[in-house]
Length: 247
Image 1 (cartoon, rainbow, N blue to C red):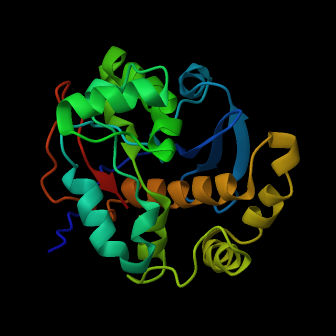
Image 2: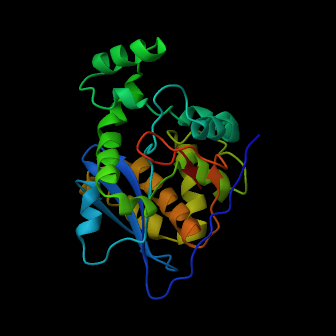
Image 3: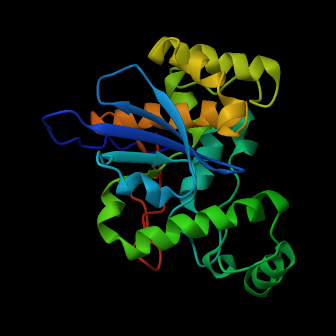
């Protein structure tokens, strides 16, 4: 059973700054907008920390990266997301267990996991460990940012953007990309098309921008108290980080 939680959004005044973030080879891609605006700007930053050293600091950062990490076993957030997405469930990679976080190679991470769970770490999971480690270290060092930085998953965001239905096509093919871009256009107009023209300048892939926009869509929902949480009552990891996906 999938449980949903309406996130309560406090009333705010003034202009607030929201950010959706997705990892890319050269750092992070951000989709940024002020609250209530459909004009979105894409940027590339080297470190997530960079967002917090600007004059205008973000109110919400919705990021496509696992945050709370289990000591062993699968997170309920990932299991529920996979059940929710049905045919798109393979887009949800299991979060690595915390003991693998300091590994410097896939072989090392696999050996650590074998000692705990008897199985190795996939190439896809190991590829995101450095970025998971970056976010983990930032949130452990700067506890106040935990109220700002939230974990999202683009395919879960698209599920809700699409009226509670998973995408028909995988995002890696032409039909899948157009399906997702069309949904984003209904929300932010031609901002998505303008941003997609900057992939070479930003040193990123088309998918990175699409996923950052989906994350920003969820940041808007969090801001307005319209978001949902997988699971309903998320557990905390060893360092008090919530093991949840918000959409």
